[in-house]
Length: 444
Image 1 (tube, helix red, strand yellow):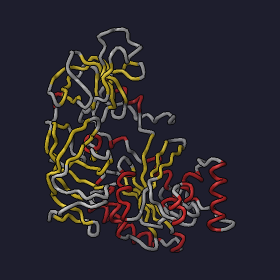
Image 2: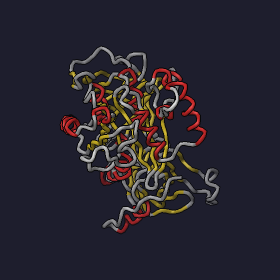
Image 3: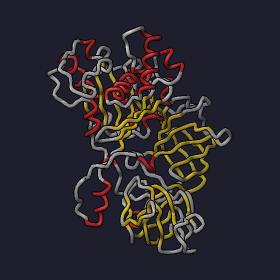
Image 4: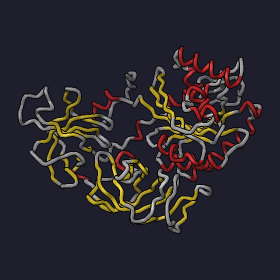
């Protein structure tokens, strides 16, 4: 279980007092990215090791593997995250490795994503739910093509907080001039991508300098170490609390709710994706357009007056209306219009190319429907990071393109830039049941 959350202070509206109890999010999802050999796995291993999150049997296995790989006297912390045999043999990351650790202030989910260009789809997968991205840069090599690509993907995925770890500073003698030079280049690159919260920290993952504690090897650096930065970055404001979206996951009837003896009980369970839901609020059921009011909100056997994004709740409505899985409750005052045509950015994850006319299954929140791929809008050039408006004939593995989809039934979606919860989707091959793409709805 996560540690108790930090309180976020009183809000002006008394109805929102429940937000004080919930407080600042204490679970932060972090994705690491960077070029091959920049030290991503070593950095995560260092964070786990220095924060004393490594069990004794795990450490013994890593020590033994380090001896086999490097000889006596070397502890290879990258082995804590490189789990596949091919990764350990080649010294690279192929799959997305997830690790968890807790400090006195927060709980972290760390995704160690691959650096090779051919594993771009794995990087997209690992970073898709991240609140913060750590982009590693080798201080000797500086900004390379993969640095630009990973910063672009982080911006595309709506990650608002970027921490650039200038690694291997010990190999450039902790040069302040080199740090300043790269900082100017990285800040300029991030600004062109629309990222305004970028923090640059000089580190040595191998030796642990400026990772969990400040080191005296760089007295010219006066900022916090990496771990403190992760503990202090504010992600609570990233939640969309304006646009109410409650996707219905399950309809609870008397036989399912043993704590309720009333035979007319009907609750709608799910996770509040965005917005703030209150008892008595007028809501509209989409796509049907039926309007009603919230009679009660329940969670874990307790009644709530208010619910906020991320809470798993059961909603009871005042009227006996037709609501089923896949429907979405929205605020009547600003209800969106369900759509059948979607423009989106798509990352293709299948070995079989995507071609116009393909028919797939689209899944977003609890909604699923068949869609037809109508055609390309543009394609991302992963070398220049520009948009090529010449429509390609097909989209190959790891390719990213703007596409137009047409759905069989109306969908309740938002632009990904304003609502990550309802702006993200996956595409599934109905024949193989494989996930073949990850998508982000574009602004209309």
